[in-house]
Amino acid sequence: MTAKADANLAAVVETTQGSYRVVVGQGIVESLPEEFEKAGISGRAFLIADEALFPVAVRRVQETLEAAGVVTHVMTLHAGEQAKNLETLSYVYDWLADLRGERGDTLISLGGGVMGDLVGFAAATWLRGVAFVQIPTTLAAMVDASLGGKTAINLPTGKNLVGAFHQPRLVLSDLDLLATLPERELRSGWAEAIKHGLILDNQLLEDIEANSDSLISLEGEKTAEIIRRSVAIKADVVSADEFERGETRILLNYGHTIGHAIEASTSYGTFLHGEAVAIGMMAAGRISVELGLISEEILKRQHATLTRFGLPTLAPGLDTTELIERTKSDKKSRGGAVQWVLLDGPGHATIRRDVPEQLVRSIVDDLIGA
Ligand SMILES: NC(=O)c1ccc[n+]([C@@H]2O[C@H](COP(=O)([O-])OP(=O)(O)OC[C@H]3O[C@@H](n4cnc5c(N)ncnc54)[C@H](O)[C@@H]3O)[C@@H](O)[C@H]2O)c1
Ligand SMILES: [Zn+2]
Image 1 (cartoon, rainbow, N blue to C red):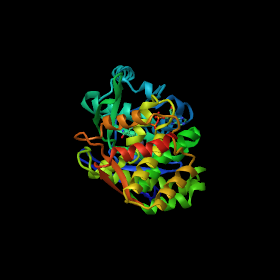
Image 2: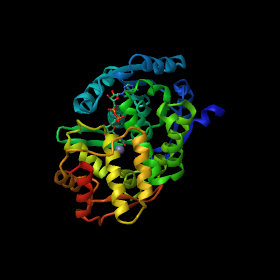
Image 3: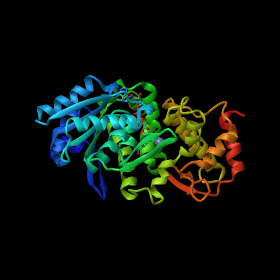
Image 4: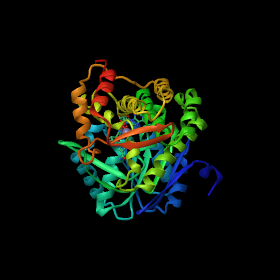
């Protein structure tokens, strides 16, 4: 192992399907062949890329692999949430069939969470499972979606209804790839990184606060370091609760109860996921204050950080009753009671199932400006 490669190591995720390295750095696409070797990956590579990454990033990955003697086939897809479906999946299977993809081959996803989920599911099911590598190209996918092995596609009746746990063999996040990402997507991604600090690591939260300028401008090493630490938090959580059976993984749902309700009630068209989560974190944070779990001061810090990263903290014009009803149908509610992830300190979270609806109602009223 070279010193440089190890400096980029954010986490080693331990799973029942084996362990995998997560590396984060700037200009590290070129270390792919070395990482493939460490992961014991051989055979051909099937690179499936979001067309937003074409041609520059796609060629860079392809040429890096081919220069190292890895036969690489490339397909680009018009991604986006609408494409995360059976039709696109079937198109991928047809391509693999035409090229006679084999058990020893590897599927690589180059793109955001949509590509990761779709290609991951293709890898989970093609020939009953082949190796899978994630090269996330959104900040949200780097700190969240690429980790944990959840793969899925959407059905017309709902999101992520068909899927599998299929762990990647490697996750490689190169900050260079974020250069073309729209600014709003970047801000949305920061919401999840900030969330990791809020729920589990006060030191990370403080460092995000102290380095916001460098992070917003994606200044190299500082940004890589903070992303590595955010990645390490999610990696720890998913290693401890691989199949989402325990309580630990639920903590990652901070801000998501109201966040999902906001996304659904606006038909996923108004807010990006991280934006809805930011507003949801303000709701959950306010509940935490009202229940006496944290001080007003901590909520103010959360608000200041979200605002600093250009994230919204209010959702004017939505309907309180509709949002509340949607929190009840959230798939993460259990036995009828809504499971609220609340803060009980900076860098510390807890799960509560006894939050009075009346309290939620008055807080949501404030968020929507009623
Ligand atoms: N598996 C999990 O654990 C998990 C966790 C969270 C989210 N998800 C899934 O992730 C998906 C959302 O992923 P996302 O937020 O990464 O969004 P995304 O994949 O939809 O990407 C967002 C947009 O940015 C474009 N894009 C991506 N990378 C780019 C780049 N480098 N330059 C220019 N444009 C680029 C895409 O084409 C798209 O338009 C959802 O489908 C969600 O269900 C999965
Ligand atoms: Zn999320």
